[in-house]
Length: 217
Ligand code: E4P
Image 1 (spheres, rainbow, N blue to C red):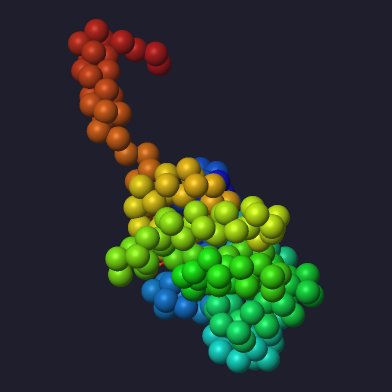
Image 2: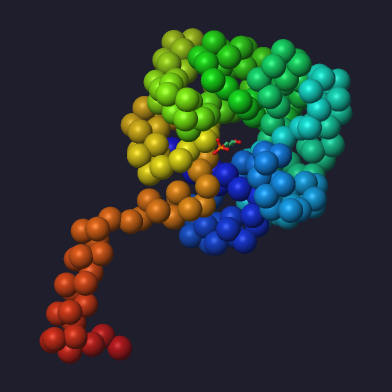
């Protein structure tokens, strides 16, 4: 499963990138607002660092303006994935922009039927928001499973990009189901390393190193 980082905070992306943990990046208007940066400037900076897809979202709601914005975003770098919302206008923009050879990420997906439409419109990525479904008592992981089944049934190449990841359990469950990609905030990715038995085992080893005065250098 590919790891995308869900943030527009450049330093956080750079830290994980150095460890080889960044296969791509996703941003959205809320993340751009949080970073307090100009969308074109910060997206360019991220694209210069990361080789994989970098999603940047359009701001318009009508297809024609989305297409114009998408073309402008695509000029930033070759690894831009233009992000459009899952509306009829968004699907129309997806069809046109993907037809022009751009990567398109169709976002705000909350049903397998929506995911089916996105695949038929040529989406490179479909972004089901599992955390936001869980927030209202729906089953986000069941959605990922349904989309996996539907896409595999018909050989769609659109990649399932599990989004709105809130926990380490979400990451593992998405990997078990076979999501192609998951995008998570840096804090969630960093917390994947944590395990109490690792901490406990290391504490014992350190105590024994001290007691036996073990030295390598
Ligand atoms: C990514 O593409 C999404 O915009 C993001 O994962 C949404 O996450 P949130 O529901 O935590 O805001």
